Image (cartoon, rainbow, N blue to C red; front, side, top):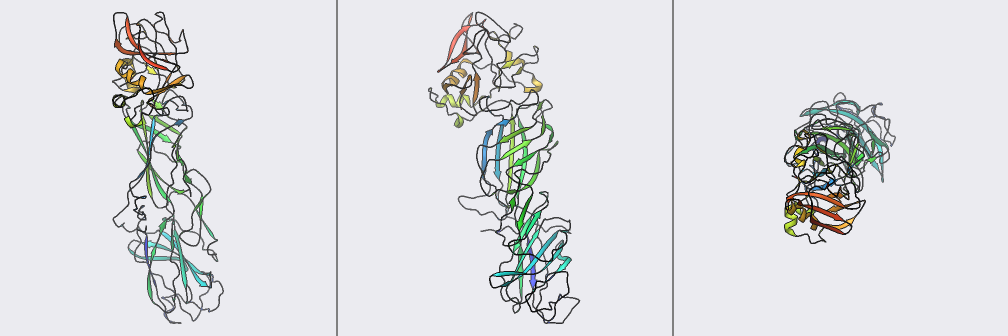
Amino acid sequence: MNTKTKLLYVGFRTLSTCCLYAAFLMITSCDDNVMNPNGPEPDGVDMISVTVSRVEDDSYMESHVDTPDTTGGRTLVDEWVPVKESPASRAIPAAVPYEGPSVVRMTLREEPQVTTRAATLGNGIYFRLIAFRKVGSNYVFQSAADFTTNGASAPTLRQGKLLTRAGTVRVIGYSFNSTTAMGTIPSSYAYNSTSVTIPNMSNDFMVYDSGDIANVGTISRNLSVSFTQKLCKLTVKLSLSQFVSNTFTNCTGVYVSQGGNASAWTIGPSTNNVSANTGNTPTFSIANSSTATVRLVPFSGARAITVHIGTLKLCNYFNVNNRNMTSSQNVQLQAGRSYTITLKFELGIQLAASDITLTQNGCTASDKTNLAKLRWATGNLKSMGNANYVWAPSQTETGYYYAFNKLYDGSNGDPCSKLNTAYYGTGWRTPSRDECLSLSRCTNKTKVNNGIWFMNNSKGLFLLLAGARTWSGGSGTAATESGYARYWTSTNNSGSIAYSFNFENNKAEVNSSTKGDGFSVRCVK
């Protein structure tokens, strides 16, 4: 097993009594009384002098164990996730259970193991060492002292004195990897019951346990002090796809629900867990950049991971405010390891062929291949002026109705070509007859919540039974008939007939329809 290390080389030496008082710390008592580290020095017994020659930096993943089941560089989560809570404006649609697919792909990756040796820490990093003497099966507090690093040189003693008697000794240490002083040393520590509060997640928290060191009074030795991480490091990254400028601004109020904030550790074996008493990290911002890194205390068991965004504007048009994005998979983050979670915001729905699972209606491998090439709008088409079309922001909204290959004002043209390019970019069109035929086969034809899922019943394409404006009803904002669905294809049939995608209860097919009828339009690219 590789060990994550912050190496402190501590020299334990036994010295004769009453010598070199100015250079060494003396122990003056042979009884079992607990000693105040800031009190008078004892007489006439062995003592310990501490020297530190090197302190490594806080690189994560150095303790990673490479086994067939646990290897660096694993992808733990890779899925489309719901974006819950209603949008503040026309923007990314809310993906509540039946309202349609998600528009955020969450990827959680455990970063690979660090194989190169880390550089030393800078000057002034505080750490505390606590000495216990073993008496029977108990550990009796002896002394404690705080030090600061001095680059690659020996550290500087800041307060206290690290003293012990001859016999079996155990040294416990901890550090926040911070230049902030660690506060007053208590008069005593109770092994395995005194807790240390971690003040915040801005820095690290590392611990050290020497284990039992026998015969300290008679054997001269050097001890390597190896600090292990009790927190994990999580980098949150936002990624945009299919947006015009692929930029974002004003990302604030972000937090992650998968580990603790306020927490404490018990002085004792390095195997002691850090306990978390909250489920969210502190809030942070990713304003005008692409990543932010936080530290957290992992929970002891596996659970879903949630990223909350307070405010976010995509491409200067889409507001993603007060949203939760939660994985369906349960994962367990590990202390001392580094992770990256990426939230990829996309316009539209595009599934890999392997994700197309609704095959009960004769969906073929060729259908899956063809459909995997397409990106579908997440809402039915609406008209906000001839050059400013949008799609409906919610799957519960029917959108408007159009005659075949007509704009909303009745002039000729593919209405999808009029989508606002500032919002959606270019290349959107009405799907063809063949594309809708593939879609009609890749479904289970099951009505849920006034609509039918295609390709996949959780992250695929959800189309409403939006009705129609029959008898050449043409364009309009409301259907004249309900209980079924009619969506235009782009494929002509004859002078007055074109192909439409029709479905209702237990039926999905492509048929011929009168060009003057008003049907729904779902754009594709």
